[in-house]
Image 1 (cartoon, one colour):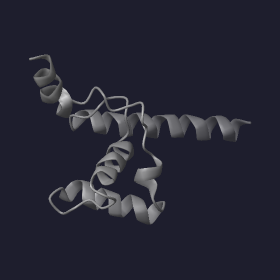
Image 2 (tube, one colour):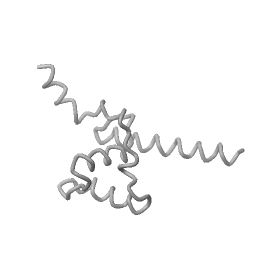
Image 3 (cartoon, one colour):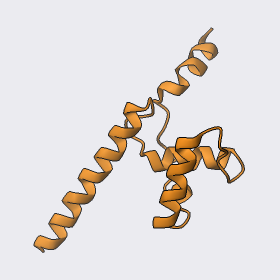
Image 4 (cartoon, rainbow, N blue to C red):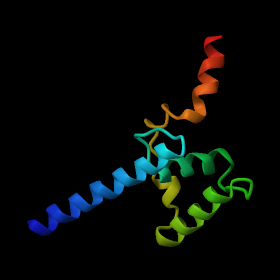
Length: 94
């Protein structure tokens, strides 16, 4: 039982760090970096180009650890509070 509690605790901490990293980069604070990368990858037809080198490198690393990780990690209900989208939302109001 203790092993399960410790594993869940560590998982929760890692997810919170992942979401914090996404927020620090201007993303939605409730979305993981993996989900964001997956959405970018999907919007680009399944491959991230070298115009986004950090996302490309992270996707390559994540894919080696867990095949198709970023696409599988997409959270459809998250990502709406990204700073990247503030400009788009403002234009809709105008």
